[in-house]
Length: 379
Ligand SMILES: Cc1ncc(COP(=O)(O)O)c(C=O)c1O
Figure 1 (spheres, rainbow, N blue to C red):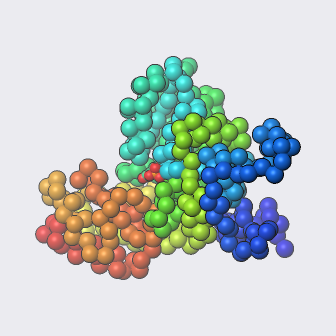
Figure 2 (cartoon, protein in one colour; figure 1 turned 180 degrees about the horizontal axis):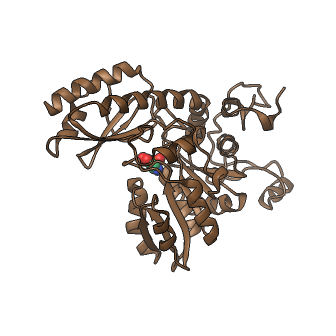
Figure 3 (cartoon, rainbow, N blue to C red; figure 1 turned 135 degrees about the vertical axis):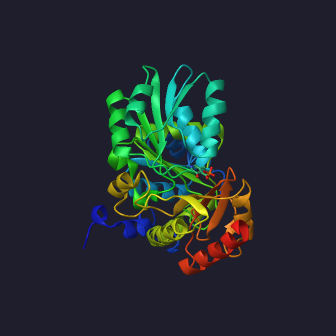
């Protein structure tokens, strides 16, 4: 019988952090839908407040349902600790505020999620934090951008929306040599495909709204790292008032149990759709890390063991509305933002770049829908 430490990913995504309820025997975790917790005695209150005994005080700083998903995520990411927040952006902002103060500097990848970008462009200057943006596939440019006051290097393994590939171990070496914190947004890959902390990163971030929930029904974020770093992020989540709700923690507990199976389907189907798109005369470029034509293919192959995730983007010939017409012509797939859902979601980014989050439908049905939408939009 393998021990808890040697259980495989599928076993841990199901069992880690939870078990039958000790009071009722309920097989599934209860939703502790409470804002506060009553103390049984003054002695218990003092022990919990002093941190001498584990216990809960107020749901903004901890909740039993939330603790279960945090323990599970820390285990899956190979981290000492993890904390959940109200959304991916809640944990990104909390982590940046925890790491940076006035006079500090951050080096960030040039292609990242829109609202993280907005934080760098609008919030950072308000707080006197310097920002340099670099193409993180150019390691010399990353080294050159680091200044004495640089505290953080920030990147996404597969970038949103251009699907650029970042060589996380090489970037981690640079960050560790410089003594700065390396934060990786791991949303597109999920802990099933990649665990940044195993490759030298210090913080691994997820919009859990995406693959971890998997069903497009909860806004949530999770972040993993050392206990010391996560404690600082937790403090910011409390200051910013952005904790996850117990119900959303429960939705993550339910969704994550099938993460490996969903990711396998996302990866297989995305590969087939990328190959289909590459053969279409009206498709001018396909960004999918699994295609040998992708400039980051070799790095992705090394880091992801031959699986490349469910996200791709492509450009279409025609005018600047072709992408919108394509999305509008879809009959099965949804014209919507977000990603990591079991449904295929298509979003024309900047009109000319169409981003696809490949869902878990039968791949032939997705391809047939794309085929008819291409005829209607480019013909
Ligand atoms: C890569 C990435 N990181 C972070 C976020 C932010 O997550 P949330 O929408 O849960 O705040 C998103 C959202 O699309 C994302 O795509």
